[in-house]
Image: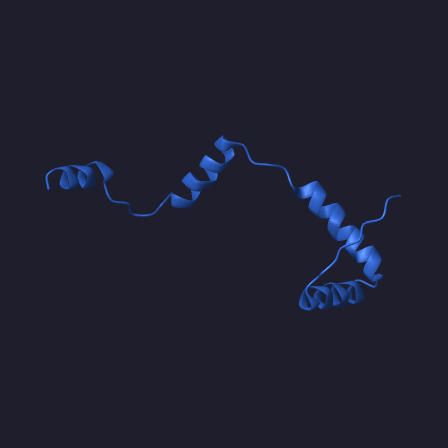
Length: 77
């Protein structure tokens, strides 16, 4: 199995991972392997349509101004 060397890890990040490993009863190496595996499995690029749907969902239910009215106001100046 290949090895990976990660340099310049922020001390705070390393401490958090060490604490996480201890809480889970695992070695630091095993904890990092699990974090990397889960991260690699979870990352799947979103399509443009998915990004648009997420934005639309986040705006749903809010009060929004009428952009056509704002454009008319700007053009009349």
